[in-house]
Length: 532
Image (cartoon, rainbow, N blue to C red; front, side):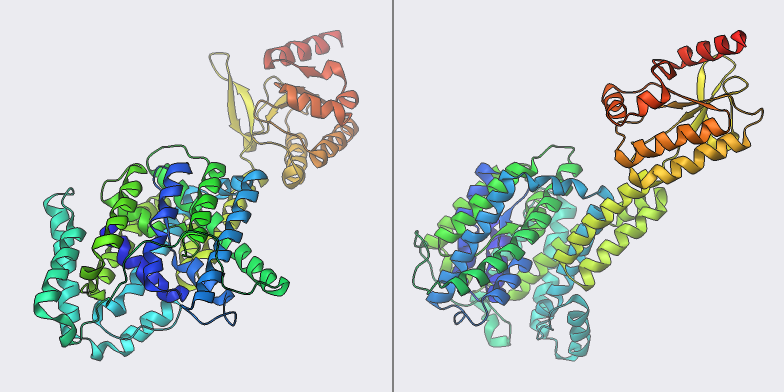
């Protein structure tokens, strides 16, 4: 993790407009704080491309990049972001992560992987990078393909061969670490820089100065601008960190608390603000780094912080020799690993409709941006849930040869006994499916043969009836009475019964029309017919 993340976070400082060494600070105190106070066993917190870009855009015009004033504003921004995260914990906004289905998570991580991989190609070839956006970057790479530096390309290929070869030999071999150390040695002895190979250059050592950010004017106008930027960053952190945590918790069948993670993320950004660095976020790429190396707990990231401490104190000089192509090649492979082709294929095979949701999420992440992709993923997840609840797969019950109740498709119009139909509604009843319920019930009544005398709603799967659905039930009572059909209920949960009582539906239907079991309904129906 340290061997790969150290150079990666240095790259993020260029996006953020911060001094190079501040990138190392992001994986020192902030990373350790989340490891100690967060919930996720896998999420790695550090500098991130999305939040770095938002930060840079928000600080435009306030100070010169890399200046002391700029660094101070970055620290204030991190502290404001921490305030939003902690307030979000207090009002329990962590539940928003529950609106990310596994389908969109696979699409999200696949999109992040493609975006990350495309972003590394120019560095691997030794050509100038393109503008923001995966499509623009890829187009730029093709346009400048003839300018490829062969030394840089050779280094990139060597790194890929070392990493992939070591994994084929044994997954326990630290291929990336071998590649990084080998590249430093080769760069030192062969003087890669003289052959046009881009290297990191001088990296200052030492520990960050701890304390509140100072040295930058803070007027109400500036504070308002910083707060608006901090809120944008907060939204991205909330969504991206939750998406990554949930993805890895799902992969290993583990639990995690979104709300505890918010505290961990908040404290991590407090640490960033007090240690002269910039906002940190849950990172899909760093999390994948640790995961692919076999890390299964936050002990990995605590170890990383200790190694970064040692690097800052004693080993910054060797880092200057690392070719940027080495770092790009390592991150390129991390991006490729995030592309879940197997998962996408499984969705296509099992749920074709949901495959398009995953594909759209992937496309938005790749072509528009990570933060937009995450927000879309949340919206699409809600739409998937709404779609399932809008038209639930209901059934009618029939009696099989063994005399037991068995569910049958509503299209069968089956009756338990002549004149009695039991209709099972397989979802909570709410405003969106109330009209569907009305149409399906009336269809059953109109097409019943012989004509119905009783229609029983089996509520075993109904866990809630909202105001609109209760009103619909009341209307259904009148509609059925006009057709000389009695509406009865069975298997009603106590909470649902309380909702029906408050809505006066129980009074309208009648206490004697609500039964505990299906057997009670059949017995009462037969007795009613005998009395006739």
